Structure formats: structure tokens, C-alpha cells
Image 1 (cartoon, rainbow, N blue to C red):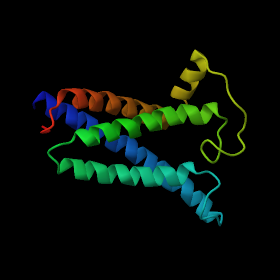
Image 2: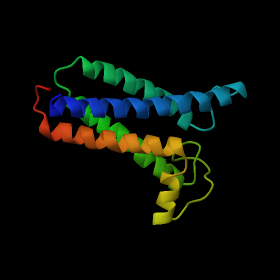
Image 3: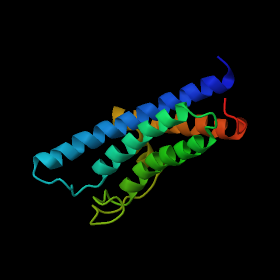
Image 4: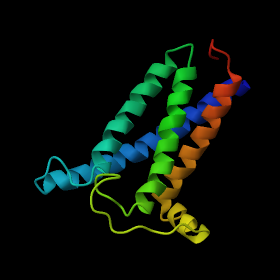
Length: 151
């Protein structure tokens, strides 16, 4: 397999896994609210995870049928970096139910230990962050090395 093909494979698989994690978490979280009688949950992460996960799957499908994938590389970088940065920002801002708005549980102070505690908070958190970072790196390499004609 050529280098571009391998990088696209790694990027696509990493993006797929990150989207699947977020879609699964979003559906599970949102269903808990729906079962409690609230279609619009107090915690907006769940609908955002569902919508963004589905949008990523659509983007992967469309990108797979395009010759020029550079816009999708850039979009993937933005979304994957948004997931990873958003995870830490959400914790830093006190686990606010409306993402960055609403009453939080208080702010946390950043330290290496804080970062490691959140990075290794659980297998799902670690796997999601791992695949998001792998996707960002692979997509960034593709963005700067692949010409406008795609692979």
C-alpha cells in the first residue's frame, strides 16, 4: 500500500472509531434523559455527540467518493481536535451541562497530574483521545503532503 493510502486508511479508521465512541455515548446518554421524560436533555453533550457522530459518518462516506479530499482532511482535523480539546475544556470549566454555559461544578486547576488523571480516566476516554490525536496527526500529514488531486 502506498504511503498516502496507508495514511488515509489510518486517518479514516481513527475518525470512524472516534465518531463511533461519541455516537454510542451520545445515544446512551440521550436515551437516559428520554427515559426520564426529557427529550431535550439538561446536558447538551449527548445531542451534540449524536449529531456530530452521524455527521462524521456522512463526511467519511462523501470523502471516500471524492478525488479531492483536502477539505475533508481539514474538516476532520477541526472536528477531532474539537473533541479532544473540548473534553479537557469541559472538565476545566466545571462540567457545565450546556457545554460552556450553565452552572458548573466549579473550576479545576491544571497540572500534569490533572492532565494524566483525565487522560487515563477510563478506557473509553483514553481510546477516544488516542484515536482523535492519531486522526489529527494523520490528517495533518495528508493535508500538507497530498496535492489537490487527492490520492
